[in-house]
Length: 425
Image (cartoon, rainbow, N blue to C red):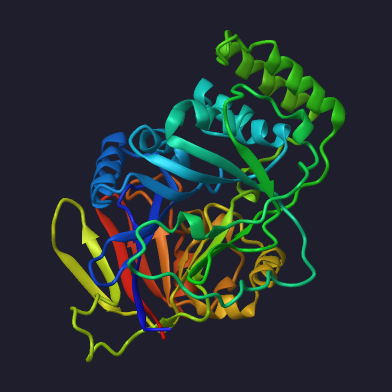
């Protein structure tokens, strides 16, 4: 096999209180994008800032007409209110969502600070909602089902990596899908039948054969009361019009709140669900640090802070030989849950993580004391709004992770990106 070189990029956009993270793999010789992904797209701050970053992202694709993977960690507004805006502009081949039963999704929607008819429709039928807003721009929706594993998710085989000259890697994507639907799927509502969707417990990585892998973790949920499911489903069905919209949305929201208040869990479990995602090269790829014999300029193998509305960058220092990234979304990281996540990914992957998106904007309510000791990454990324009222990121969390990693702050005025090179010999 002749030498093969690829650039890879990780980017966190300056959108304030929310998250808009992207990644890409490109040909190292001409930087043509071979594969790209988005992890969440939303903000509770200025819509104009989010729109500006979406526009800039689409322009940066240099005419490439699609996003390969769009990963939605959970259904909070500050992580998804940009999804429809992107899908109206560019095709999305595959959207990944954490699967949860209907009553769990509706509970999460009702626990939002603001409950809108649109967010309720998204919760009632995520695949149908995405099919509607995306129309011909949506390929398929893949739900990641929570599961248990006695062993870690095994690595994919050491296949021959693709040629950097390939312009479309979609034929190399490998995803194992389940033959059956998960428990609770029979009770799901269908507001739109014109959508392809499937399920996977993600016991194998989603991979670009020979090059890159994505490993997903979704928490499992206890069985939901059947009578509650029937009550919630019947009330929603009573409001659905022929076009899939609700005829009495405000009254429906009030009625559903009453149902949950009277019959269901009265706490807030909205951050118990989030699609934790590992992304990185298959182990046969090497992070190349020897550029002396290359006939092209070396990439900036480092973090840079991109200042809003400026072209200047702040250099933060080189990456290590660990090239992978970990996205947490907003999940509450309890000690036992973190142990499950580490076991799910496996120690080899855990040791290769150099960048971690700190869960829930660094909220002190989402982390246990001295959690940082369980990690080996070198950069901790906090995405938050400068004027948020939740005190994100929490000082205790930042101080904890400062003991073993550099702090990267991303807000409405500052984004962050890094790039590196893979060398397959």
